[in-house]
Image (cartoon, rainbow, N blue to C red):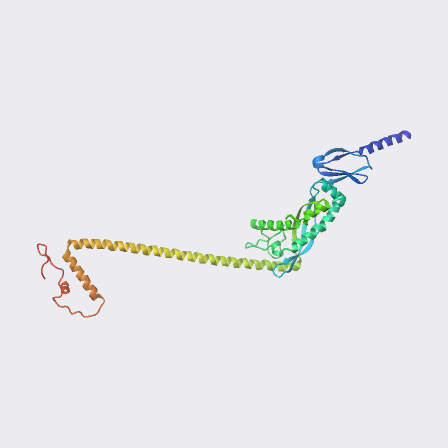
Length: 349
């Protein structure tokens, strides 16, 4: 009996002495306390390995996961803003999730003193994030959260918003995705306070709870049945506006094409008229040269032709009766061209 008690006591002693040894894993923080008071905080990233402490119940060890953790937020309803009428607009149900972690040993010490467990961290973060998310959404117009369809019927929304029932299938193009990412980033920055504000969610959670909020992402916006009709109407009005814009742009392009064509036609006509004038001038000059050469060859005949042209110009556009003496020089034209003598001189009439 006594031997059994000694063996049991020896085993108990060995087990008790084993509590003086503990390990620090790379993926955790180890928080060591002595009679409830903190003694040391080990960061597994820099202090992983086997450690020694006073046996239980003198020293106790609390382990905290240093990896990124995530949890879903309960859905929260929020009213969007109408910037035109300066009133509330539509009610949206926001579904989001949070990723968080404990960044360093100092934050781990603060986390243990204020929060203690990951379950308690979720209970603290959920209302804090939901309240700020609802506040961020309430300051934004609905148009900043929802992309109405483009000409091809696409429907994009921040962080994958659900398509409105009856509004058509969602066809998201690259441009829609870029706009979607930009809107999601605006919501995220406003929520987390990435602009450097000390009141931002990220700074507040780290300073008060030792929690680094890595990210908050909106998974979807659910539209209550009461607002789906108005959203669909907004989509239709946006499509009508797009149609009007395209028609106006088409008219402007048609007017520009017509104007350009008319200007090109005028330039062509002006070029043709200039070429015509140049060719006619060259032809008249050539005709004058040929006529001059001919006149130089037979001056008497040239004088006859000039008189004939003068007579033709005189009687062509008039009905007046001309009384011309048979001795008038013009009357000589009626007798025919001057004849030449055998020696080349003009014969007398």
